[in-house]
Amino acid sequence: MSRKYNILVTGVGAPGGVTTILALIRKGHNVFGVDMRDNSAGREFCQEFGVVPDPTDPGYAKRIGDLCYFWRIDAILPLTTAEGLYFSACPASQNVTPIISSQDAYGKAYDKWLTLTSLYHNANIGLPATDLTQSEESFCEAVHDLGYPRNKVVIKPPCGNGSRGLRILDAQTRVTVNSFLRDKPDGIGMLLEPLLSILRRRSVWPTLLVQEHIEGLEYSVDCFRGENCQVARVREREEIRSGISFRSTACEDDPFEEVALNIAEHLDLKYAFGFQFIRTDDGEDYLLECNPRVQGTMIATVFGGCDIINAAVQEAMQPGIIAELPQVPDGFKYLRYWGGVGMM
Image (cartoon, rainbow, N blue to C red; front, side, top):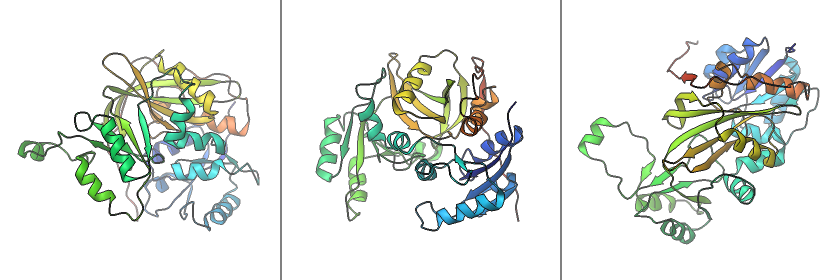
């Protein structure tokens, strides 16, 4: 029988904050939350809530420690990438267990360049052609080597999340009267020269990945990995807005399951985490991203009957306790909708 714990969830204002909290409450856990913003929607669903500084702030550790003591926290589930990086370096102490992979595993999975180079000879999956650039000269050279302006080219920072810093260089990017009136702006498509103009304003040229642009259907894989159980549940991302899945469908027995678990084993990821893949019209599969923490739409898999989030809590507190998890029925659909809370 699953035990109940006092769980501190960080970054409760993240896209998956409220649903993660509700998934834990559904299993009887007492959920406490923190966020850098006081007016975070997630606070309304927690037993107690506190504001914390940025995890790079020297006062972050003391603030978290004080809250863990006052709230008698058993485990910490970080939802933001930066806090995941922080807690991956913190071993269990004062009876508080971080539900996150080790520092080495998290660091490799968080850094897109390290992920790609680590998997280059160790993954049965396509990897987009990618260059790591650190100057304007190497950046422009990499862009043109990948066929721009004939081909689209993807630009992204090696360490980033939530589509931050993502741009697609597309020489066909044009705003027409019809597109201006009809289309919602996504801010992703750009021409090379305007991007160079922006980057040149920085005193130091940023480190950027220049990557082959691949078109096809995108998939998310929600994963759990413990001592006695590892599962991967695949869902097709049928509608994506601002990098977030708004409609997805479960795909049982998809080849991405085995691929994801092989990558997870190679990177030594644990607990709840996920991957994003793309499948071209020709049936070629490529790895896009690794998320070494709870994914923003992991609740889709939980609703489908495979509670990866609670399994991560139980595994962190009692290693080896999870022996199996159910499959999600093929064709199970998840629809995200806009919602809100009122607060004083």
